[in-house]
Each structure stands twice: as C-alpha cells, then as structure tokens.
Length: 147
Image (cartoon, rainbow, N blue to C red; front, top):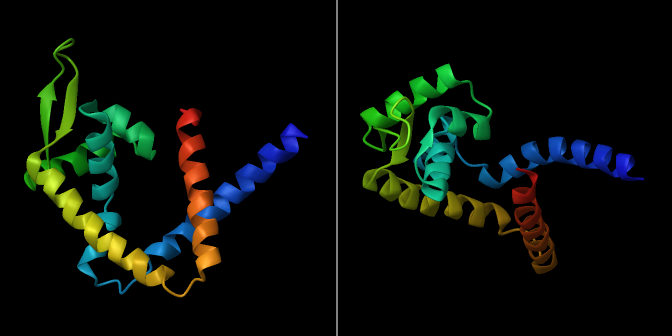
C-alpha cells in the first residue's frame, strides 16, 4: 500500500507545480511578477529564512547548478540585494546573505504577489478557499520533514 501511495504522491506533486503557477497568473508585463521570472524571490526567501548559506546550499534547495548560482548571485550583488562573506569557521567557504535592501525588496514583492493571488482566488467559493487553505497548510507542515 505504501508504494502505491508514494507513486500517487509523485504523480500529484508533478501535477501540482503547474497548477500552483496559476495562482500567479497575471499580465506578463506586471512588474509584480519580475521576482518570479529569474529566481530572485526564491533565493532571497531562502536566505531570509536560513541566514547566510553557501552558493552550493542555496543551489541544492532550488536545484540549480553552482556555476549558474554564481551568475545569479553576481546579479543580485550588483543590485545590492545580497552580499558575499567568508564563513567564520572556514575561510575557504564563501556564504551569501541577504541585505537590508534585499529584505525590503522581498516585502514589496510579497505585497504585489499577494495581490495577484488574491485576484486569482476571488472567483472561488468560500468552501474552495477553505479546502485550499487547509491543503496548503498540510503541505507546509509535512514538507519540512522531507529535508
């Protein structure tokens, strides 16, 4: 039975990603979508939650190769959203951390993205909203146990 459930979870998870993207369905020129286009938002959220991390650690969480992470982080540094610092315990390791400007960017982005989701959910019934809320809460409670 467990194997069948695991197979079902795999299939559902693969179907879920494109469906969740619909929550952020908006005019492609909407500036609120900009952080989602280039992984800026995801990287900054990880750094905000976890604190300073190596490029490799961030890349593993987002399934991005280290060489690609270097390019992305260079751009984020140029924009003043992150900075690099040597690890206090191992000077060979360079960590990335979010700056105050990066935190402000996240807060502003969150407001725009929440507004898009709010608009997209406005046509759902109260029952559907409640069901979706509970389902996402369950996923949020279980997902951290996977790592």
